[in-house]
Length: 231
Image (cartoon, rainbow, N blue to C red; front, side):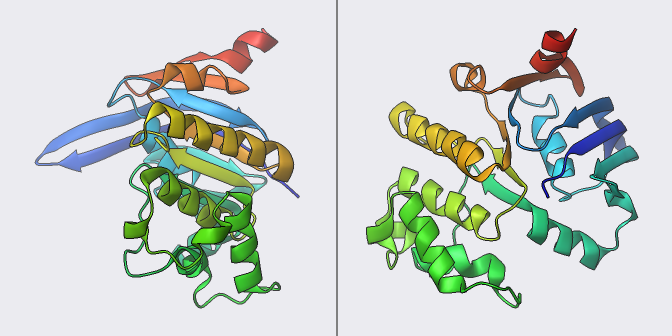
């Protein structure tokens, strides 16, 4: 069963050098299972902070993030790690591939020390085929283009069939043509696998093609196209 995510009066602050920086202010919104959502806004608007909270990489200073009927901030450290493994796939701008591992080994990396009910290597090979890299299973990251490395990262994020793919500037390091390929891949996976997608981007042309676009500024949500549609 796919689950929705709710943010209830979520605030996030960071302390440093005696200064408190407020990154998110009173966020109240829900992300419905299977949605394809873009988040836009200037640097420092809170986009990446919100994404890290949705994926339980960090916890809010105040407020509640609820995944289905589960409050994430009530989970212990190991429970949070298990939650991320079971439900969340992350895709980053910098790819974060391990340079000494092949494509298939990078895709398999999240499964290290995990017991699963499927054949790990077969699933990894199948995912690389899905993203168009069937001939690159044994290639090292240094032997791949930026777009190919990002596709390996997408396959890695999908290895345990997550409810949600969270992508932070997934096309930021790519040329426009390759960025289009990655966007279309995420859109296809959203439809075919029914996984929700939240992607942070500075590219408004891509953002407007999502089913729902959220605009942030100074830690606040200033526009939400779904909310407007329902109004």
